[in-house]
Length: 298
Image (cartoon, rainbow, N blue to C red; front, side, top):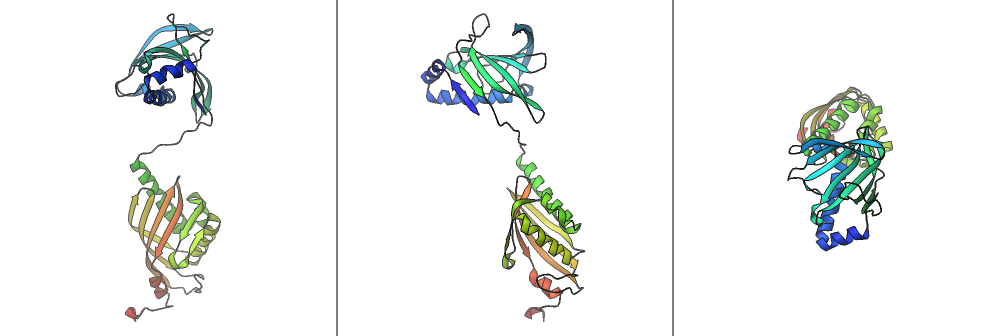
């Protein structure tokens, strides 16, 4: 992306206003270019259609817009020109921080990005008294590429999404025993930490471990007792019950029912689980199997 290629005259004019003004101009100008027309629907905007304008062999409808004071932008009043396809063609404003320099901002070369038409070419020229641009003097040149939209969620929404991801993972992979769907919830680079059981790196290694675990306990159910989410982390306390029908941790199938408490902490990034710390009460597990009885239960 090439941002704000300024002509010498424009650059000098802004520098005269001060370096901070130059940074301020670049910031609010880019924000305005990228957010219109969506911002025009916000509270406080006054939008009025005025007489059309003839240019480039087309008739452009025009909107005179008064920006509310809480929006930092070029000037309070700005004019938008709209083609027959409903897309912006031109955008007029005065640069108040630079002595009300008049500008005609031309917008073109639209690209469809996730169903939204986004202009990739912006050229700004001085606007003359007869409302025509002085095309011999290019003030600002902006070209955009590699454009994509990423969903922005509130903190509360992200926390709920992270909770639902962990719940769906537990429900699908463990309670419904669909270990082949682990990749829907786990990132390729996932890390599983099991304390004395060690650490397993990568989905290619974690997935077989899950298959072996659930395969040895085919009727397993993990019942959520508590769930807390903060930042990118979800912590859950489960009560796990199952029948031991296969080799697990080197212990042959016993056919016994087992029940233990589990405390699991998950870290989530980009909608996938990237790390898990599994805290299972393994002593209770092997005691249920009759393999070992701790002294205090003897």
